[in-house]
Image (cartoon, rainbow, N blue to C red; front, side, top):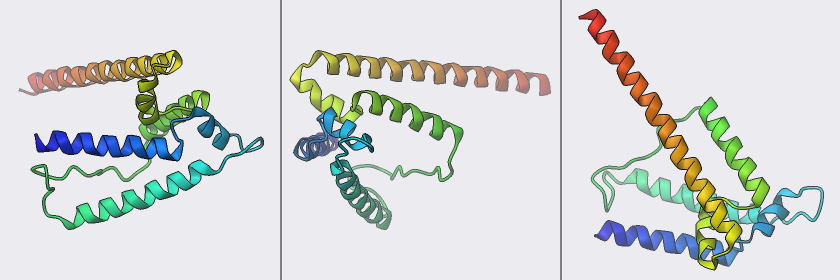
Length: 154
C-alpha cells in the first residue's frame, strides 16, 4: 500500500510541476518547436531542470544497496543507440510536434474533458496496445522457433 501511495504522490507532484511550468499547454510546446517563428525557450529551462533532478535522483539511487519501497532496483541497462530507440523517439517526436502533447501532459489535460485531448489519449492507448500485441506476437514466434529448434536437436 505504501508503494501505491508513493506512486500517487510522485504522479501528483509531476502533474503539479507540469501545470506550474505551463507544459500542459500545447501552444508552449509548439512555440518551442517553432525555431524560425515566435520561438518560446521556456521548455528548454524545464528540460534542464528535469535533467538536473533526474541526475540527482539516479545518483542517490545508485548509492543505496536496495530501494526504499521495492525488493530490488530496476535501473536502465541499455547504453547504446539502437534502431528501436531511434524509431521510437522519432515516432514520439512526430506526435509531439504535431499536437504539442506527450503522454504526461495529455493525461493531466484529461481533467479538462477537452475532446481533442480525449481523442489523443485514446489514440495513444490504442498505439500502446497495438505495440504490446505486436511484441507479444514476436515473443510467441520466438518461443515457437526455440521449441522447434530444441525438438530438432533432441
